[in-house]
Length: 265
Image 1 (cartoon, rainbow, N blue to C red):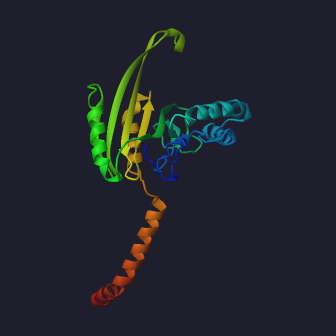
Image 2 (image 1 turned 30 degrees about the horizontal axis):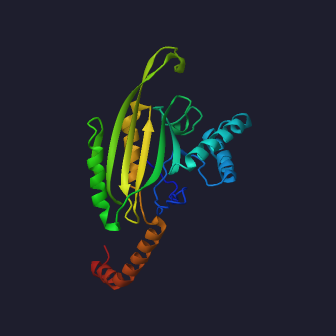
């Protein structure tokens, strides 16, 4: 479960009184983004598209009741500081293809590993050059809990701190399908990435109860983090193409001379 080609649209804040600069990352295949938006009309419209994508084999009997539910969830998150939230659904099938010839990772009929993924921006008092200092402070604070696995990360976009937390929850009989008391184990990885473009820290969180697939989820999170950028990737790509064109012009004569010297073979 690694990110594939997908959206690199900027994640914009939903809380106008604390507007952080934009941050970009690659949205992995298998993620279904919840319909976060500022107005009820936008949330309702996005919710309709969301349920049709999430329940692609459903119909109006499923989409109709589900759409208002997810629109309401998006409304609850609107004031929480969460700017991106997605459900991750991944097939647990070992087969590459289904009997119908479809890609097996898209077919959830044989079981699915699930996760929740969010991104929020937390105000932190820092200057642009202080990202290393902020990350060091976060590392010191999180390391106080001996039950958490806290580590320093050097990402392409700058310093970061990851924190992995495992929890065991006791579920009462009325909450379980078997009618018996059950222990539920969950795992969460949370990565704090200080903005180099403003006094904020981006917090990426992946949470799952599908702990049998924790290694795959960890790899997925690592893949996402490698794509995080605080500058527009499209502008960076355009600048790279321009620089490459200039370099080709400057070295054209050298390349021609080398070709002539090699001669025919």
